[in-house]
Length: 124
Image: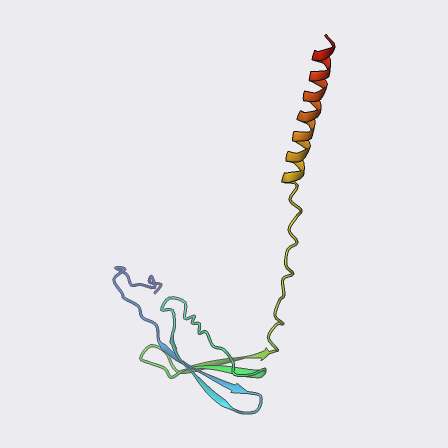
């Protein structure tokens, strides 16, 4: 029979199951990363973890089983390389400030106009 995942009356409270995570490094060191709880609807899980050093790691997830499902396990592998080099951002060169030049040019133009105006006024 096909029933909705959350029950015929939509009243089933689903909970995830615990999944222990273990990491085995390329030199054989076993690291217990911890236990995560799966998403009740999809069975997915995640865990943040920072490896202690560069190298190859095998990550194993295991489920011991319960009343609904038998035990199971899965693994994957990752290779950790060196951290990226520090990025150095060059200092920005500030553009020149031409404010005083523009003000000086404005004053010079006004002075020239004033002198020319005085000369024209005196000729009349």
